[in-house]
Image 1 (tube, helix red, strand yellow):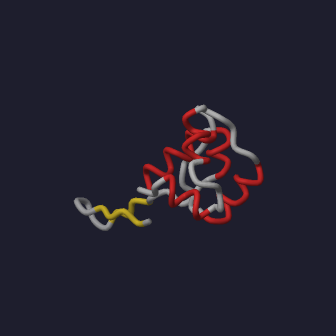
Image 2 (cartoon, one colour):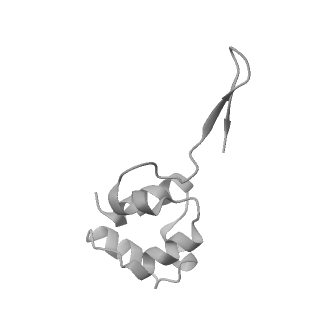
Length: 88
């Protein structure tokens, strides 16, 4: 899987439209969708913008696919034998 596909996975997870993503990281309209459709690459300058704007996204995961998608994955706290709560 390429970095552009991992970013798409993140956007789907966070329910962020490609258009909103393009606006947030200052890309031209349709750039992301075109790169995704053609399985193109994404430059380091854009990855820096993505990292700055989406601080919960693990850029190492975007680049390599290793580790967790989110820098701060949900943690489960055990309150008693039968109660668990997810903390984000």
